[in-house]
Length: 273
Image (tube, rainbow, N blue to C red; front, side, top):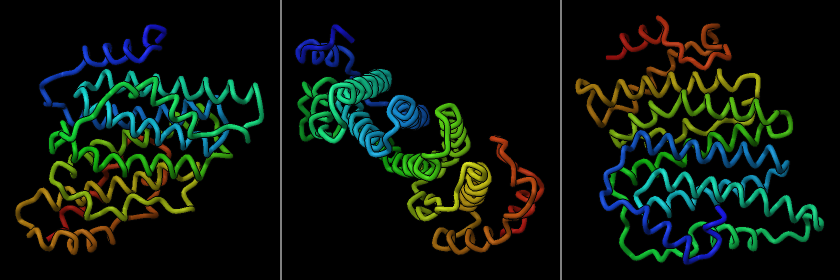
């Protein structure tokens, strides 16, 4: 990082990493994005036990991610600069805390400093380099980000850094693939309400809630990807189907990160007409 302290050096570095071809593996893109947001939460939480500051870091990383990707089409570079932003943010906040009280810290100054060290030299034109597939991934990124935010918020005072990292990673592993598949069919916005975890989601039942959510997403995907169902009736069929989900089934009430695709799931699928 020491070679990237000057804006001209940083800009030269970024320019060299630009990829002309705008073809991107969207599944890998979604994975890299979730990793960037996870890291912004867990690494900042490990060093700075301040919820608001951690959220500032996350939103900053979210912005940097899409700006760098738009400008370079380079996933590896995008992740690198997001990691750079996290490290710089932690160093800035930690140094400020050592020198003075946190009340004197201006978060705008912090963000301007980080942006200058990551995207400051970039001059974005009016053209958007992101193709429609990538824009669709950006669309679902808000859902997985909000889920991670909610889990962190609800358990902020009662969780260790190690547990938080494991929980967020497992949540992404459980949900990312099915969310991506639904998004490819451009149907995910119709079930936006499913992604809002309620205040009763705790560290003790996170995997239960996430398993049930995955259950619903798998059922929804089956319906929208099956040509025998009419498009204008997808939501009605789905709403009828999820009433059959065995919420109290002991096989769902566990902390295993593997999705429980048992006979109940098969029975629900077979009952949909």
